[in-house]
Length: 145
Image 1 (cartoon, one colour):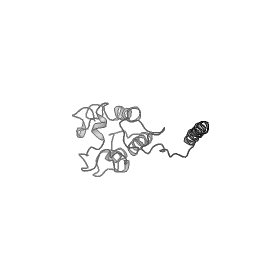
Image 2 (cartoon, rainbow, N blue to C red; image 1 turned 90 degrees about the vertical axis):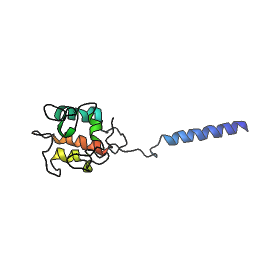
Image 3 (tube, rainbow, N blue to C red; image 1 turned 60 degrees about the vertical axis):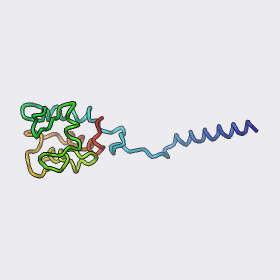
Image 4 (cartoon, helix red, strand yellow; image 1 turned 45 degrees about the vertical axis):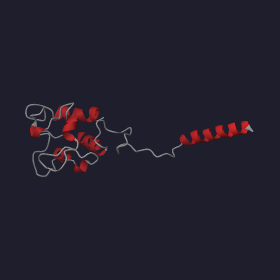
């Protein structure tokens, strides 16, 4: 009788393991805050855009004396942007984590901001692929990854 119990228990464990190997369990699709394969990395994808295009001197977003008090250099940009109120469009957030559509940063990058001020970066707009990366990062939850 003991052998039948051991066999039944082993069969039950095997059935559970086989069940776990199927696609029956939901997984979060990439790009929705689930940290999927296609997720945008702040440090690898977004910060380099800011470093090259925004955190330059003179007069741009470099250091505490940067335009609008916004510091976009590596190590400070995340804290300066995410869930921080815009000085130009208060009470809007610069980056509303999870919603690029509600993020003033996107409006500035696309030149659609209200009140109408200079689109960013001044002089040479970002290419659409970089803006889309920033949109995806924000929509993915604006994680500090």
